[in-house]
Image (cartoon, rainbow, N blue to C red; front, side, top):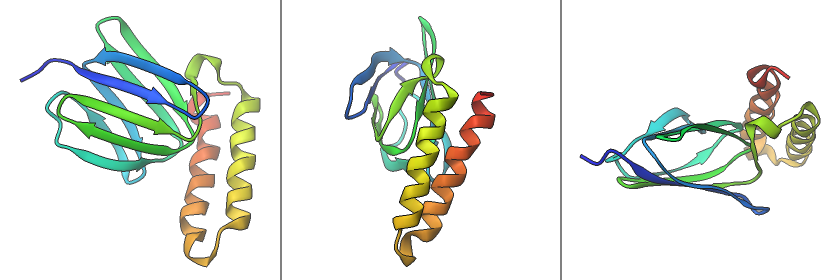
Length: 132
């Protein structure tokens, strides 16, 4: 059994993380889960939330607005719509994400209303989660 795995987090703007970790806590669209070495392969979408990566060098936290994740036995790769180091997130950034989610809801078709509502609710929860 391996004790570490590769973790990569990228957004269209930047590559935020590329490191060896022991675990990654991920806000999956169907619920939070933790990826660890030897994890079963999975591809899923992300909901707005906080990613927590644990390594021998400490813990690292990132805020994401959504995206995709692929987990294999030896890696976790996240392609985020938008991602920020948690320590650099301000209320203005979260309010901008909320405005984007509100626009998405306004433009969502009938079939997408439920997922757009959930995206907006999850984004609004970031204010409470981050205590900002």
